[in-house]
Image (tube, rainbow, N blue to C red; front, top):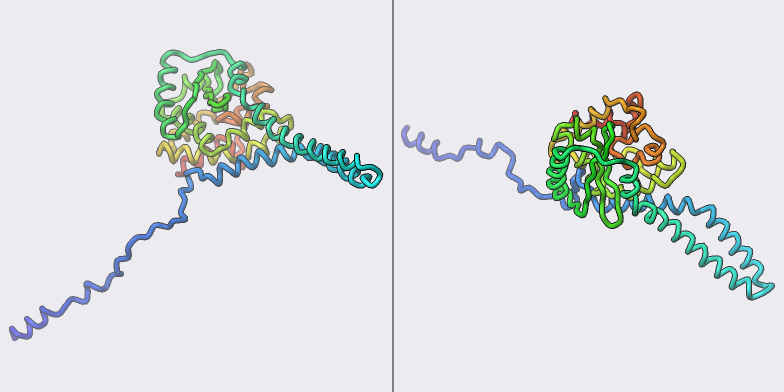
Length: 299
């Protein structure tokens, strides 16, 4: 009996093999973090600006092409028509390149233009709060050579724009006065996320376009929503940015504010709240602050 018991005890337990076998984890080399801007995404936004500039230049290009065609058709009459066709083709190429460069030149001084539209505002305490947030987040987002300005306006808004080879960050005195530190951090992170995404150039170029529909097309509908995602992932606290958006959704812009002016309408897509002058929310619009807040609150 004892021998039978010992023999049973020596039998291996089959329960040890009932579970699944351990499989070593293997990283997917093609995986990309959806909240980290990729090189392809940045290039896509740069291409959008080039395509827009080329589209604007197309009417003139059609004229050049027609003249080149006529010149080539008439080359049997004289060799000078061949020369004329070559000259016209060269002028067409120069005109296209000039159109592409016009946007870059026009936005190079945008920081100075925005600064000239305001007077200085804020208190020394506001300045210290802003510098503290900027020092930390510019390192997080890898943005340097940045100048910061608190401008006098009761509206809640902020913008990061190119200023030559550097950047200028603008924030209103109303925002600095009424926003909590964590909300200010969300606003700054959002603006820096736009630079990481590579959308500053197309947003800045939109300030040079006269048609409202063309401005929005160039700026990229819904890109503020995407910048919110990148910013919230970087600071790891989406509710801070959501709180800032809620504050913007509740504000009533006085008629004396810059954000009730025609110039704001021209420059709206460089700002944190691109629809400050919107009277009622539009949750079908990805750029609406109400919808943006709702999305972050559901994270």
